[in-house]
Structure formats: structure tokens, C-alpha cells
Picture (tube, rainbow, N blue to C red):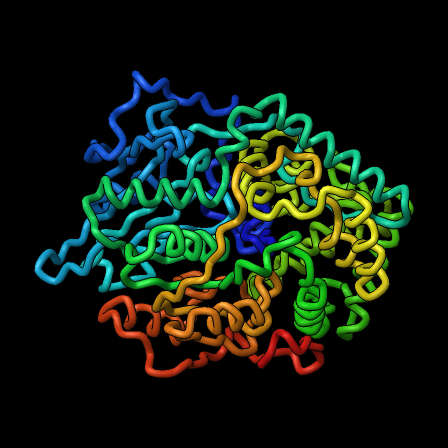
Length: 532
């Protein structure tokens, strides 16, 4: 599942179904103790050339084998835990590189960030290699797992859940329960990983990225950022001006829009995406039994939430209450392909059976997700994502600010208002060491955003495009997809435009548009700030 800041849940296995790819928590599913930083005397010198080795960690490492088959190699770059104390404790940042095979026409190094914050990159690098097609032969394609993520030592708060994200539910009692839940998560983080929390931020990740650039011997790097990765790229360009070449942002954040909390303001876009899915499901009532009209399908969703508010729904061994059901519904949005729509329908059908009969067996996507959501199986991913969130966009410290926002949101958006305005652990988190980066520069970049993206509003992409007048914007019209470039979505118009820019470094003369995966739902109600 993707939040406005990136992916909130990920699948436990890499070869995942479309809904599962949005739902579960982490590709590598690291867990265990908080990262053990290297003593200064035990670490290699920062800036030393990478010591490349095989990317295959064990016989089950399918991504490592794919990288090896393509000639990829891995290394660990030593960086300071605290960049203000370069002589102090060191940590290692995992890097993978698939070298250019056409040395005569090599363009340079293309660095990828998959979003999150806290998404692993190395295990998905071959997906980006495939998207580049023939152009991959001309780039050294580099994936950097951000600190505490992926193949790095984890930051693990030892939570009993994979994610802080929950809905406030109904009434003051529901909100108070969630405030206590979030305070408890923050307290656990202080106890289990408090020494690392000050050093999990986008500014630190940007400094690590520049250390990787230096270790690779590159004066400038090209950069592909997805979702949160667009914010990392914006911060990097502001902190290290002149060190980027070709820049592509897909699912574009406008930095000023991240405060006071990233999900705020996306309720209407998510309701629109849910309606768009319901319009797909309605003609397929014979297959899924959710209703024969768009409104009837949405009414089924409403009955599921009402039932969960009365009594938690039993799905397998788990009890899904009013705080969790909206999260599940939100989590499956952001991909408008037919195969994803079908899996959403299967999941909603499971919830409907649980609401009507009191119990249901989980479908495959829920069977994979729920253990993460209700146990500490994937605590490390959620811990790291939250640490970055609270460092970058801490928001208000007073819980009452969130409660009032929940009540305002509930009045207009009964399902998503209490979810997307709810309190987070950040009011109870240690205060950030640094203020957020002021991104007031201008960098030539190619930006891509769908008009109906429910995670990053299209208005954010337009605002960032205005802030960087040297950029160009590709608008994907009628699409509800979050992050469009790549082989999985298969939008040839977007892929060709991005690869043409990466190939010659020339931005399109004007802003352009591409059609989405399928025509927009004519019954949907897009908000004015989604469509120009």
C-alpha cells in the first residue's frame, strides 16, 4: 500500500500479485535488533573505492541471482552515522551496480530510489533495468538501499505491528485509543532504537547518496526518483547543487505540501479512486457479488465499515475493527489495472463475508498482509519509515490538532477523513535534529504524474513544476496510478518519453500528456486540484 509519502505496506515475497504489492510490508522483510553501527576503528575509510562482490547472499536470494546474471555487483559504502561528526561512528550503505555494456556510448551513472521512505532499492533494480530497455546498455544502473533499509542493518523499534497507520474510528473514544496506540509505538522506539532515531532523515539519506557518488568517482549522477524518491531527489539537488545530470521524478512531491503530515488533503482523491474501482466492479457482480451499480458497490463498502465499527470482523485468526478496515481499503488504491481491480474485489468480498456472517477465511493478499499488520514480523520496515516521516514532517505536537482535523475530515469524508487525518507517532517522537530542507533551487527535470493519483495529488506535481521552471511535466490523463514509469504499468507513451530524455539529455520542448491505462470513469467526481 502506498501512502502519499510512498509505500506504506509491501509484500513479503517479491513475486507478488498487484494488490499484494501494495498491501504488505517489505520486500526483504528484515527484522531483528536495531542496527549495530560500526566503531570508527572497524570501518573502512569514507570515500574509499567500493569493494565489489557478488550480490547473491544465499541460495534463496532471487534478486541477487538476477543481478548477477546481468553482470551486477554489490558493495557497501562506509558513511558516518552522524555526518556532523565524520570521525565518529560509521555505518555501511548497501549499493548495487549493473554496469553499462556499451562502453563506447556510455552516458554515466543512473541512481534509483524506489520511494517509501524506507523502500529497498537493490532487490528491485532489475525491474528498472528492464524499463530502460536497450538504453540500459549505456548507463551504469545503481541502486542504493537507504540507511537502515533493505540490505543494510535495520532500525527496529520492535513494534507489535508493521505500521503505525490506523483510522481514528468513530467518536472521541476511538481517537483517544489511537493516540494511546501511537504514543506506545513512539515509546517503544525510544527504548529499542533511540540512539539511531536522530540519524534517520532525508537529509542524512541525501548525504549518504553524495558519499556514494564520490565513491563511484562520478562528478555528477543522473537520478530516477519514485514517489518519496522525488522528495529525496529534490533535497539532494538543494543540498548538493550542480551534482545531478538527467533527473526523472515519477509521482512528484512538492516539499511544502508534506507538512503538517503527508496524507492530509488526499481524502477526496482516494474517494474518487474508490468510486472508479466500484464502477469497474459493478458490471462484474456475477463474479464478485458486490453490487450491480457503482453506488451499490460503494454501499457494500459502507456496510463493511459500519459492521466493523459495531463488532470487529473475524478474518482467519485476526479481528479487523473500525481502525483497520479503512486502512485496508485505502491500501489497495493507487493502481488502476484490471488485475489489481480484480484483487481489490476479492479482498472486499472477503470483508463482506466477514461482515455478514461474522467470519471469513482470508484471501491470499490478506493472508500475507495480516500477520505483518498484527504481529512484529516486519517491524523494522515500519520503524524506519516512521523515523524518516517524523524527522522530515513532524507536524503538530498537540494531539488535539489531529482530533479536530479528524472531526473536520469525518464530516466531508466519513471513510477516509478519520484515517488520513489521524494522529501518528510523531507528536511523541524525539524532535528532529534539523529543520526540513528549503528547496528553492531550479533543476532541469522530467516530471511524471497521473491526474487522479490518490497518493500524490496532481496539484503537487504542477506546483513543483512551477517551482522548477526548467522542468517539463508529463501528465498521464485519466489514470489513477501512483508511479507510472516502468514495465509493470506498461504505459508505452510514458516509458518512451522518459527513455528518450535519459538517452539524449534533452527535455521535451513543451509539457506533454499521455493516456492512462483505461478511460476515466465518467461517473467519478475528480476534485479541481486533480485535473488542470
